[in-house]
Length: 117
Image (cartoon, rainbow, N blue to C red; front, side, top):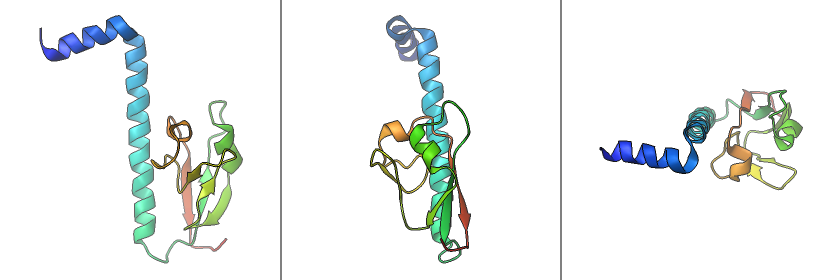
């Protein structure tokens, strides 16, 4: 048996196949969305003074965190953070500096604008 097969079988025995698949999907979704969010933030910053504000947009879904739902359509200065009801600081959705509870499975996005707050 290969190392991969042993690892897969061991994981299946300990966690169950469905749990591994669900966890893998969650991690992949979060990492991909985080990369896109980070990329759009980096690009907005690279544009210099073009963007002056940012607006948080959350999905209207039962899975959406209360802290993110509270941000929906909130606009702040481009350099200001969003601060959750719990005191977590996020510059953008899926900010890697934030608590994992604010990042994992987040589907929120930012809209950037040249209008001041």
